Length: 253
Image 1 (tube, rainbow, N blue to C red):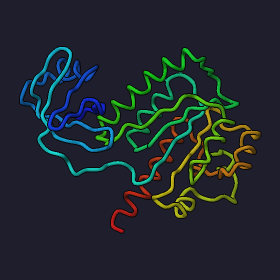
Image 2 (image 1 turned 30 degrees about the horizontal axis):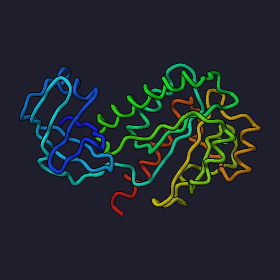
Image 3 (image 1 turned 120 degrees about the vertical axis):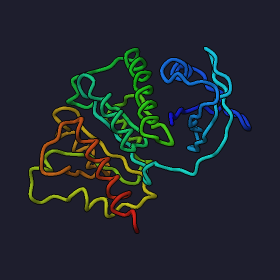
């Protein structure tokens, strides 16, 4: 059953009003007719099976038939801070990271980031990025759409990090030493009430200066396995590991 995220203003007592690009999707892509059922997600995370009542070129009216008792969100909030990578790699990270349960994404300008977005380009990119995470949330049947923050500097990232309980950064030097702390060991000391911030560097990773700044501000360097991962792989490895640890490994506990 196709899922759509509907803004808070679209919810009535028993009806839902869908506007925008989703109307085109219902009309032209799915070719739904009146009487068909879809799933509508409220911004607060709830979801309901709804029956389509009226379909026009500009809007869709649907009746709420049944509220669902479901929650497929990660049991722990994980925000991924991603150093700006080249090309369309960030789009891949956002799409797959959404499927893996990321709560939010913070793009940041790292010392070794090759790209540098001006304000106009950033605004255009954010429109595209928000569309990607919305579609990925629908595809993976998420209850909520991850937040994507505007691009910030490493210094601003450090300032904003006080709101997180666990602050980690993937550092490739940790994969080269014998005296390291495994990611699994770190997660053993994390509870589901904690908010995790995990920082991934761009191509080339974090500079020694950035690593020093992060260390001095309560961030813990971790390794993501013994191999050196590409920047577009690292965040996905981390999210998959967190999902396994908190959802699969502990599913019977």
